[in-house]
Length: 98
Image 1 (cartoon, rainbow, N blue to C red):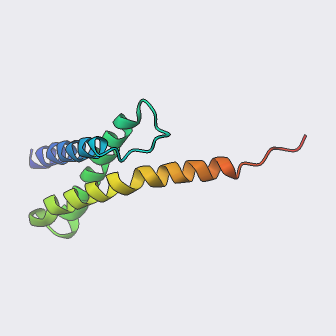
Image 2: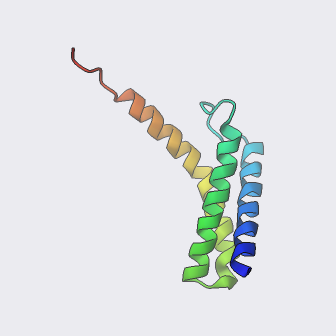
């Protein structure tokens, strides 16, 4: 029961951090309409992964701060990285010879 509760709390924490990132307009402009949901999902998944990584490596005492820091860094950096990678991929796409 405890792992499920921790997972749900970390997902909620990540969604809260994702909502704060949306309020700060940290999502790329290219993600027009549904970008806010992507940022919420990134925040939730990164917080969940950070929480479990912190619990496995550092123990339950430091799992919460690890989840918070991972979610903040993930929400701040991953959308920009994804947008940069997509733009680079489109720029280097060469036409096929006929």
